[in-house]
Amino acid sequence: NAESWGKIDSSHLQRWHLRCFVFAGSEQQGALLRSGSNDISLETLKLLHERKGDLVSHLEVVCSPERPHGRGLRAETGPVKRFALEHQLMVHQPPPELKSLKNWELPATSAVETFDFGVVVSFGYLIPSRFVSSFNMGAINMHPSLLPKYRGAAPINHALINNDKETGVSIIELHPNRFDEGRLLKQTRMLLPSSVTFNDIYMDLAKKGAEDVIDVLTHYDRYIETAQPQSQHGVTRAPKFKKDDGIIHWHTMTATEVFCRWRGLFDMVPVTTSFLGHNVHIRKMRNPNELQPESNLTPVTCEPGALFYDKLLKTLFVRCADRWIACDQIKMENKAVVSAESFANGYQLKRQQLSFGEKL
Image (cartoon, rainbow, N blue to C red; front, side, top):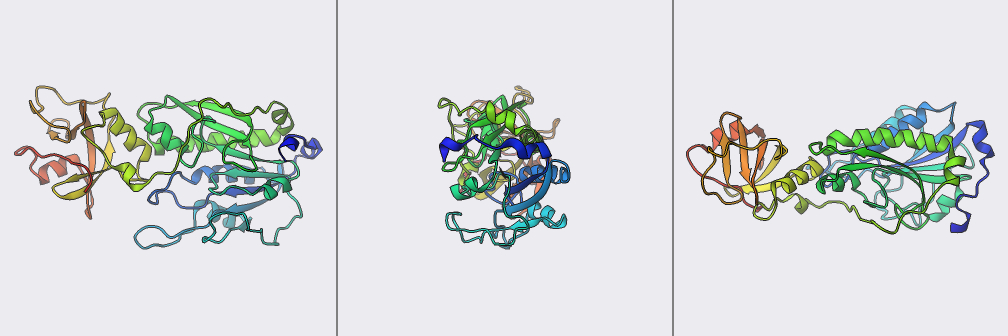
């Protein structure tokens, strides 16, 4: 129960042979509507595996189930499960039809009777309190945000979309009833440069989070003594994204807002507009603070969504609510990705004034 949190027998720690149970996301990165990459989970599992025989004596994994995705609706084995199987780790998986783990029981195949720690990273299910209380010493969760900011499934994406200047990782006690609300054990801050994308930053957060998990497990008695409840101020949510979250509204969104939407969603939810009656994915953009067209070359009057191709820069500019934004790669519906130059030449943008609109 809540009163027993932090009251542990730390004598196990002195032997440096922890029996750890890892709950980790298993789905492939890049699937539509994916809210995070489970390479984040993989980094923690790798580091725990490296410490077998040293810090860790036994390691088992619970993977979230693979679900069909993509045009072929195939269920592919994710990176966490592949790593676990390749390294002969015992893997447990709830069936994909389960919406929660409330009534799920672990198969009676474990090689040990009890575990010292549960380690949760990007798992996606609320861990039932009976699981949490079963660990001899406790359960911890690595969350890639500065909690209590961005509780939820997509913290990295939301930090980028909101143009935050810093992010980080939090190691918390696992709360038995609610997501991402346990006491803070350790928190590490990281700068968030204004032009980085999700793909640029998530691996840095994954590696730092994995290092902090090892540090907390190694010095758990010290961290549990200084654990602090999360502040009630500054609580924000980071829910999963839907397909429509990628639609660009040129008349109302500033260039910075458009760029931040693209760098936060990246390939997970396509940033989408329309052109000549077809849907278009904008695959690559540039920070509007770093590149603008020469004002004497752009059209004198233009509405948001207007297109301008800069032949010297070989860049396609789109007018936002306040200024221009550069787009370097475009994907028309059911066609291959093309450069800005190929797109401009193909639609003769130098000879006619065309525009992007909102998604059909």
